[in-house]
Amino acid sequence: MAALHKEAIAPRSVSKSAKKIGDAAKKGELVQMPEPKKKPELGVDREPTEMTFSKAHEVHTVADQLIERGLPHMATVKQARILYIFSSADHIAGCEEAIAVSRYPRKLLPLGKFDFIVMVSGPRWQRSEKDVEWRKALVYHGLSHIDNDENGRWLIARHEFTGFLAELNTFGAWTESLTRVKQLDLFAKD
Ligand SMILES: [Zn+2]
Image (cartoon, rainbow, N blue to C red):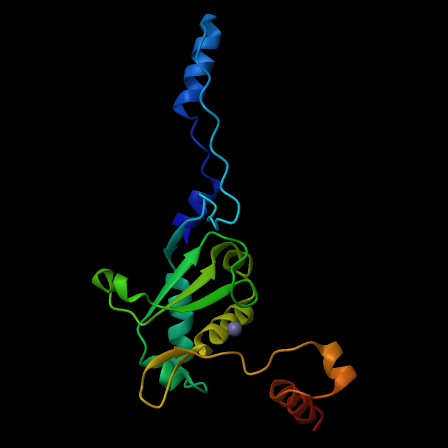
């Protein structure tokens, strides 16, 4: 994580053109203004240029501990080859905006033999330094998305329950998902 942190606080170097303009201005020279940067096209999904990725050894360690504890479903996860990475993004399109699990792209197999990528928001991980339980719960959630079918083919498991509390209150458990939530609630009251 040290590398990620360093990158995050490293001062931006002054661009060559900006320096050229600055130097010339001191001398009173005329300089050609650089062309403005092209705006990104509308509808084109671009990653912010400053986003960086690094290996997430700390996440890997927590995951291995969870797998070795023999928690539910972890025997399946143990068979998967997982690449753990940090993103420098604060918000990740995934779960809790902090973790995202995806299949490892086949085209990247020459670079490493993996089945899944578990990506965690580096900034959120850093901020949770003192909240060990949050970290464990987050990683366990991510690992729970790793699953296989009856033929042993890897897949991403969907959430077992989704919905809004308001719809449950208004319309009751009208979906299979909300029925599970209702059952959990009943268990909690026992
Ligand atoms: Zn999830």
